[in-house]
Image 1 (cartoon, one colour):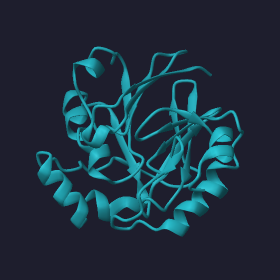
Image 2 (cartoon, one colour; image 1 turned 180 degrees about the vertical axis):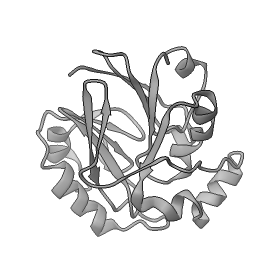
Image 3 (cartoon, helix red, strand yellow; image 1 turned 90 degrees about the vertical axis):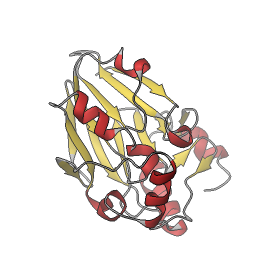
Image 4 (tube, helix red, strand yellow; image 1 turned 45 degrees about the vertical axis):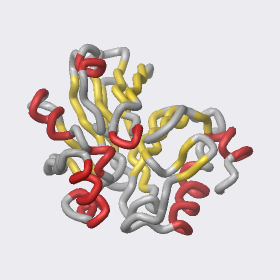
Length: 205
């Protein structure tokens, strides 16, 4: 398995939109569709999935554009994020302040243990509630996309609706810090890091 990862920190609030390509087959997925623009469009050749880690507006702001532009893709979202994806006071205010985009209906709802197959790459779904009640991460071999659960030397905000600090700490300790130390972390904001580095240095966990 070989996965090419490109990221575009251009979504609302500097959200990272990831374009991942299975190099064996050329099949592609967008993870956290907060941004769509020419930088992304020029790299898309065989888009199969749009994958969401959690239900905050800055991560799904451009989901509708992807689905309109690439009508054959499958939009997948966490099964536990219904409230935030289709309501939520904080999300509504954020959406209004950035143009008012709503989240499309997901064609595929994902829960703990589910998998998404992209060519030769298989993503395992890990439920990591805390930043939001239904947030998930996507793990494949030595790479994990953590949304807003774990950042480089930081963690997600739990002050918004459905957030809970003890739950997030438990998710990080029991679901993410049990991964191999050399696992690369691609977070929803900021630069990439590694699990081992965060275990040694992250001051919040």
